[in-house]
Length: 250
Ligand code: F6R
Image 1 (tube, protein in one colour):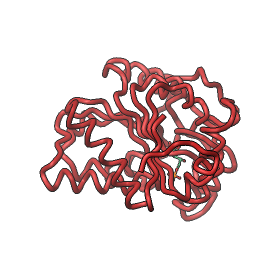
Image 2 (tube, helix red, strand yellow):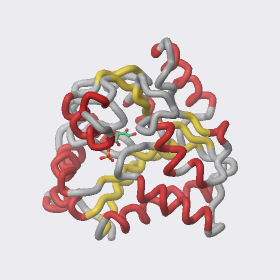
Image 3 (cartoon, rainbow, N blue to C red):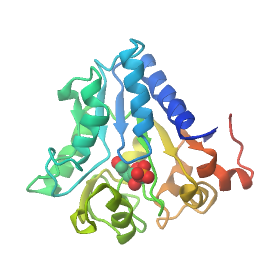
């Protein structure tokens, strides 16, 4: 695992965007696995700037997103499809038909999940998977205790995740209780993983994930077994990892 420690959120975002840009430049038809949430927003902004400056093209890029709230329409402002459109897709030259987000309104969630697994396979697998991490160590919506062997599936969100995501909704009651998510198995098959973490409130989760035991209770800990992981964080989020003596690059 490579760990990059950035001075602050802006520097972390630039570093993450540089790694994604390098992937896009070296393999212009890459399959990017994308994440939502607060942490990657700065990296997406930087990618948009690189595109507008003429340094990057997404014309041949294909994307698959990690997850979507179950029950939200793609037009709902808090849906992950809406997030991706407004933070990235609407501002770059990616072809709409090459962007894939699970359908939160699918009548048959099991069928939607099976179709998504097939889609990822048909695309040839994920070249670079971007991840954030929840305070409880979740990745995508794989919550503590979930099976490491699962592919895309329907999950019931934990109280902690609902609490954390309430900041994006008017009221806690509005946060959907279920989501469709890629499973750990899909994520572990990605050829490269890029995780972004920011803020002191993530330090404990980062420490447990990368210095603790590999356990279902901390879903991100499985990444210790992936051969190509890059962790990019600000110094607050990485503080406990650094204290524990994990080697970091500047
Ligand atoms: C989002 C996702 C989630 C987030 C995680 C961290 O697609 O899969 O696992 O990455 O909840 O969210 P933030 O970045 O808001 O702290």
